Amino acid sequence: MEAIFEATIQVLLSDGYAGLTTTRVAARAGVSVGTMYQYFPHKQALLYAVLEDYLEDVVLAMDDASRRFHGAKLADMADGLSRAYIEAKMRRMPGSRALYVVAAELETSRLIDDIVERCEAIIAGLLASAHDAVFVDVGTTTVALRTMLTGTVRAVLETDASPEAIAMLRAELPVMCRAYLLATARAV
Image (cartoon, rainbow, N blue to C red; front, side, top):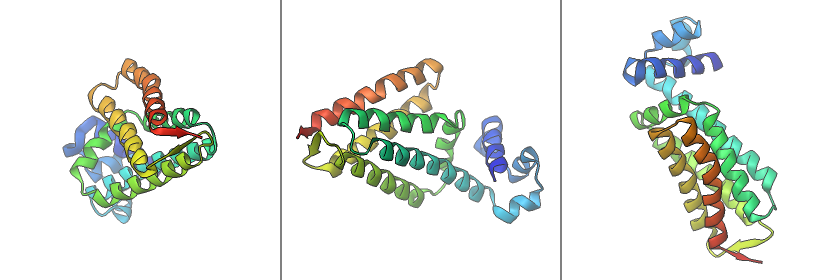
């Protein structure tokens, strides 16, 4: 599967969404077309699986950060969570950029809703564990923080994924998240 998913990203990057075929992916992955069709009956099923795998990696990175920073200071949580999110997105560059196109082309609302729900549960649990702050409305804070993470990273990756832009993102997103959380929390 890993070889098929990697080949899918490579074909997406070289041929674009319209140029991707299961035949091209099979050739790039070194598997037969029959093997491809055994797992993925059509192009959309393959792309959906690749996107799902990618998003699952992001959720796992956030969950790992949540465990590492559970009960920490709020500023450390903000830094750790934002850095984990960025690094999860960067691990599969430049494929991350290509997958934004895939997500827009496929019917992914259920998948995205599930990922958002899981990420928000992770963030809410982490914020609730802060030993130096409480939130009047942790739900609203969670949604705003998740939106800040996803929107900012997406904006950079879709417009300018240059090394300079990525370096700026790595430096500034933790600052943004930390400032927001500290501004909305009450000290205990």
